[in-house]
Length: 268
Image (cartoon, rainbow, N blue to C red; front, side, top):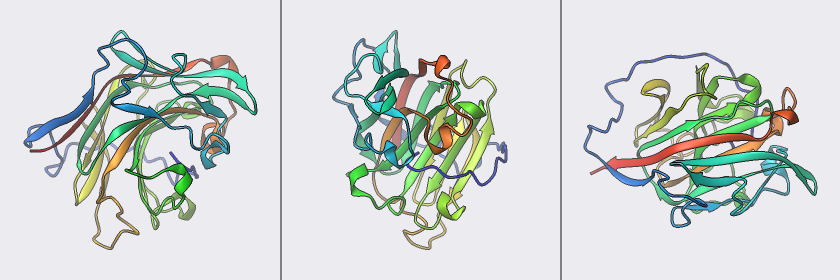
């Protein structure tokens, strides 16, 4: 999500679960969760707001201003988290939205996020992870690593991406590790987007259908910088080099990503 480049291919891949995949039956324990069974702003003991890249659009030329503790952009009610992008010009930005990051981070395990995605042209929704302690201001992306559990742009409705970025495997070199799956109801129904992550591999699923798998080649951190804790990010961006490839339909806003639950499991 941090920086966009042209996706190398759209290879609508469908796989069945492999024998190596983690499941909740593999002695996994729920270590962190938010079921959003409350009303108000996102739980401040679990979530904080990221606005560090607002000035330059996060390196992606994005057009939203991420806000802090604004109910119109991030609010919990009826058992769900609503992250909403609004067409609301403020200064040099034409939209507002929210980017939530977990206060906890984890090394390996299974992450599950049940969500319904926005579909408006110009939206760029993501569920992803970055290394703990890292800030947008620190630079050195993508060497530190990035894990994209789910990315979806509104102009390519239904195509869900999962990717891993590192120094050697990144969009600038057209070498990123990536996979896609097609979900025609991505913006009308909830789906569970999940990541299995071990020292040896990572896998991305939608509703237990495996569509991305990347194995550690044992060739060092330039290819596998994923042996450290990562925190979770939930956001709805607007525009950017990817999100606005076919323009932005301002009449489609507001656009919302609804999240029913977030769960993190690790081995006992």
